Length: 81
Image (cartoon, rainbow, N blue to C red; front, side, top):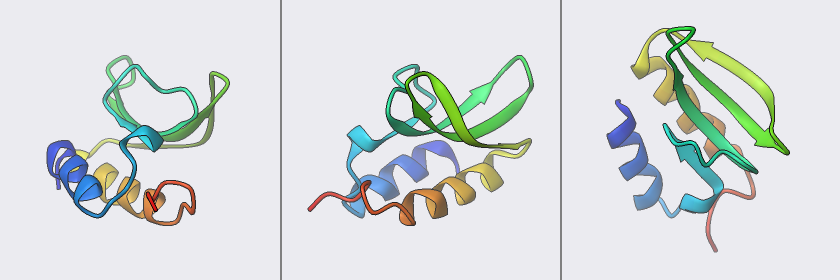
């Protein structure tokens, strides 16, 4: 899975786009998946007030996307009603 198919899958499964960001700078109060060029890693975290909580890093896009999908699926607030 790559980031585009991940985004499409989350939207198709009715996860709110306002609850997550994928490779975007709009990271406040969201579940985030970004590529950190300075570290050459994919970072997954929850952003709150500018802080990265539960930071996990991957060097492989597929592994990062799979982890992020499971990360979002465990959230009770990410799914739209």
